Image 1 (cartoon, helix red, strand yellow):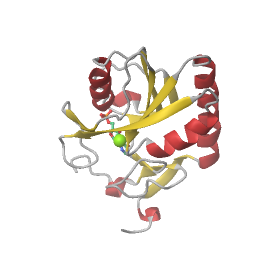
Image 2 (cartoon, protein in one colour; image 1 turned 180 degrees about the vertical axis):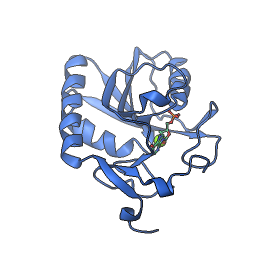
Image 3 (cartoon, helix red, strand yellow; image 1 turned 135 degrees about the horizontal axis):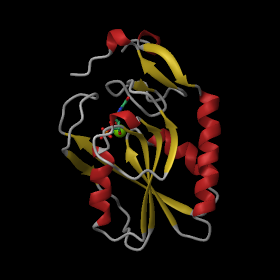
Image 4 (spheres, protein in one colour; image 1 turned 45 degrees about the vertical axis):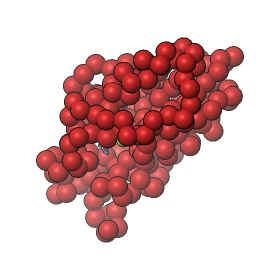
Length: 185
Ligand code: IMP
Ligand code: MG
């Protein structure tokens, strides 16, 4: 795999801006869940970098667990209405306050599938925290309670988000250059 510079058009959200906003989200979540029990559910794999930074800004006692979802469409840029849960929780969520931690909400199908799946287990509350919201691409209405940034309709990578599974480690959110953008991939 080439160096990431090959794919980078521009840095959309630099490291320091991400970290400042994540600290604000952590403070807001800490206020809202004060005195309540909290379970953070990270959606793998994109949400994992965000989770580990966010949780260190959440001052209320909480536990974490992980889920994975895959779209039937092959390739990172194709999403459709059929999402499949490929990794389930290890935690019983009945009567628990569940907060989903996601990297990006695009069409909304992924988060909708997770919300539908988990709500049948009767959590006390079920909310969504996403770092990025590509709002203009939304296909179905989904509730977002905590949002880091609303971003334009561009393919982004870094800070958990991948290009064909690479570059999740980058500390910033970058925009994929147009010569590499391939919506049908
Ligand atoms: P949705 O189901 O269309 O809302 O898509 C959500 C999932 O698509 C995210 O969890 C990401 O894995 C992936 N995704 C959507 N947009 C991007 C992007 O710009 N870069 C990388 N992954 C993306
Ligand atoms: Mg993802």
